[in-house]
Each structure stands twice: as C-alpha cells, then as structure tokens.
Image (cartoon, rainbow, N blue to C red; front, side, top):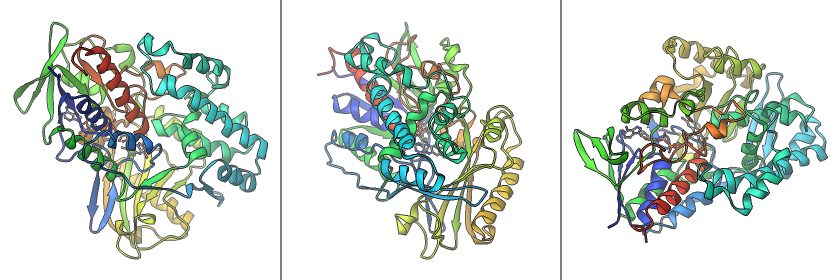
Length: 493
Ligand SMILES: Cc1cc2nc3c(=O)[nH]c(=O)nc-3n(C[C@H](O)[C@H](O)[C@H](O)COP(=O)(O)OP(=O)(O)OC[C@H]3O[C@@H](n4cnc5c(N)ncnc54)[C@H](O)[C@@H]3O)c2cc1C
C-alpha cells in the first residue's frame, strides 16, 4: 500500500516535497499554520499596492518548471529574464547598474570601477566552475549518505578543492581578484543570501553570486507569489490535500518511528512525516521527547530582517527592480548584526520594486517599495524602539541619496521585524535561514534531510541541507524525494 505522508508547512520546500511524493503515488496532506499556502512566498495588497512579502530574487526557474511538469494540471509559470541584476548606490554618490550576464557584469566592473577585464573574467569563471563542480555533490545530493557521495562527480568536486576558498572568507576570496573596495563590497553582499557574514563565511560561498552575476535573475508574471500559487495548483492536481489554519502541535513517534502528527487536537496517522518548519522549532516544539542534535542546533543563527512595505506616491527612474544602498562601513554593519546583535547606525538598505516589471502592482505614477534591512535574530531586544529608530535612519539615508523627502511620499506602510517573522512563520528568533554559515564547517553543520533518531521523519526547507534560498529549498525537496524512494522501495513504484 502506498505510504501516507503528512507535510508540516507549505513553504516552497514543503510544496515541492508534496509534489514529488504525490507524483510517486503517495497520499499527501500538507498542514499549514497560516490561512494561506506558500510560506514566505506570499503576497499582500495594502491600499492598491501589491507586495511579495518575502523573496524577490528569483534564479534557476527551471527548478520550478521541473516540478510543474510532474503535475496533471499542465500549469506553467511565465517569467522573464531581467536585463539588470541590480542597481548599487554608494554613500559617495557612485551608482552602478549591473547588466545581467557575465559580459554585462564585467563591463560594469571594468568601466565603472576600473577593475581589469582579465581579473573580472577570471573571478566570474572561477565561481562558475566551482558552482558546477559543487552542485551535483553538495546541492543536489544528501551529504549524509555515503552512497550518494561515492560517484564520479565527487572526484570532479575534489579536483577543484584548492580553488574553493575554503581557507579564506568570502571577503578574502574576492580580494584575490579585485582591487576596488566597492567591487569587494558588492560581491560580499551575496553572503546575506543565506543570512551570513562575508567576513566570516568561507570563500566557497562566493558561488552564491554565480547565478545572479553570470546568468542573471528572473521575475515571474504576477509576482513571486505566482511561484507558490503554481506549485499549490500542481500539488492539488496530484491529489495533495491542504489543511490551512492548522498548526501541528507534535510529531508522534513509537519505537523510534514516526506514527503521525497531532493537529487541531486530533491524532493523524502517517507512515512518513516531512517537516518544512524551521528545524530548531521542529525539535523544540514538535519533538520535545527526542534527543536533539545539539552540535548542529547549537550553531550561530542566521540573520533576520526588518522589512518596510511602503506605497510610494512617485516614480523613480533611477531605481530598478533590485536596488542596494550600501552602508559606508560594511564590516561594522555585520559586527553589529552578528556580534552585538543589534541594528547598525548606517544600514545597507535593499529596495525591491516589482511594479517596474508588473505595473499593476502599484497605482499609476506610484511605486511599491519593499525596503529590507538585515537584522539580528530576536534575543529579547526592544524591537519597537529599534525599528522606529531604524525607520528614521533609513528615511534619512534614502532621502539624502535620492535627493527627495521619502517620508512625504509614503501613502501606505506595513512593517515586519524579527518578532513578526517568528510569529508568522515559526522561524526561531525570526531567523530566515536557520543556522548561519559563519564557519568553514558550516555546510557540515546543517541538519540532514532526514532525522537520524526517528525513522520516517524527513526535513525540507531552507533551515536544513543544502541551505538558504528558493533554489536550495527546491533541491532539498528533490533530495527528500530520493531518500524516501530509497527508504520505501517496496512501497514506491
Ligand atoms: C524578507 C525575506 C526576503 C527573502 N528574500 C529571498 C530572495 O530574494 N530569494 C530567495 O530565494 N529567498 C529569499 N528569502 C528566503 C525565502 O523565504 C526562502 O528561500 C523560502 O521561501 C523559504 O521556504 P521554506 O520552504 O524553507 O519555508 P517557509 O517559507 O519558511 O515555510 C515554512 C512554512 O511552515 C509553516 N509552519 C511552521 N511551523 C508549522 C507548524 N507547526 N504547523 C504547520 N505549519 C507550520 C509556516 O507557517 C510556513 O508557511 C527571503 C526571506 C525573507 C523573510
């Protein structure tokens, strides 16, 4: 008989796992604590301004296409390649528009920052090679099952070992190739894509930049929320059941195996449970009777964020879809976040404006600004005070750099901070990616996609292997699909 699967959480990791398991013929139910499906990939509209509430950078769209093809409803996600990967603003007035793709990136670095063509090309080629070598071994594969690792691909990955920058930081790795501190700052920003500090995270993680710099990013028609909507429809077409407004209270086990979940006061039997919830919260809240993997869960947490969703009554031609207003002292900013656990005085501000590609996302002549600042996780700071102070600093910074009183243009406002992020998605302390990658062994300190102490329990989502961001969550789901197929060979056709 086909196994019964309960998935806890409907983030992209949960949705992708549900699709993969249902397409193998399993009976899948997804429980979601919120009233909406999609986790952080969901959308809200305030006074005519539509906002994607979480992710805005979309890379590797083929991973979504692959999932939609498994469905019976022939869903397709339409998306377009963005001509620019981002616009960067520095305090001294320097502005960079980085065109998509390797040559566009090189052109900007050479012409605007005086970097050498050969050095820029060498760096971009290196991160591409590293990415391609590591992808099949560390991203598409479970690091925690020997038989997954012993393939010819591991030899290729090992061949490149000296080039990964394992013995330096992301900051040190970029400095090997570039002279200009602005280039290094721009490249350091990719550490934040998995909630880490570029002055601590290993040089190996420079591969994060490959997708945006060598390939470019995309944007889905209808906004980022189209990703989760299409995944949900595909899952439904395969018979997946969704139960919203239903927070799972515990994972029930017997003799070292899962036997079901407790939800809405009722026990629901399951052969397999997949947790898409934050791995820390899964152990602390749902499995209090099971010994936790202390070493893994004792690592430093990733960053959280403060996000201002502002409806702006004006258009800014100098802004694009993705904009970054850098701090003058980037190193001190990361120290504030990870060491002092506070917000920095001169924060780096990221602004995403989806109406640049989806005009209906804002009223005519207006723009929907998603304004994000990296923040520490909640450890009891006075967030209402910190956020109000931050709001003033962000407004001052943007007003100065854009030569316009921004506060006077705000027509609608909504704010998320580590507390609301924790309340909405159950991420520990509002962390976005679970553990940070601020150590050379970070990749090995991410929780595997299965529980070692409970048979039948698996994990998918950005807080476990292979890590943060939509593409990695989708790869995690692929790994879970493969593990379950191996573990339930008799039951799966
Ligand atoms: C502000 C912000 C910006 C981001 N920007 C980007 C970006 O540009 N690009 C990118 O790729 N990624 C970005 N990310 C990260 C992004 O959110 C993830 O890549 C991805 O959406 C997370 O998917 P997930 O499957 O891990 O989990 P989540 O989206 O966190 O979903 C987990 C789900 O589990 C539910 N849940 C938790 N506990 C329970 C329970 N006990 N019972 C039932 N349900 C439960 C939660 O409600 C939630 O819906 C961003 C995140 C944030 C917050």
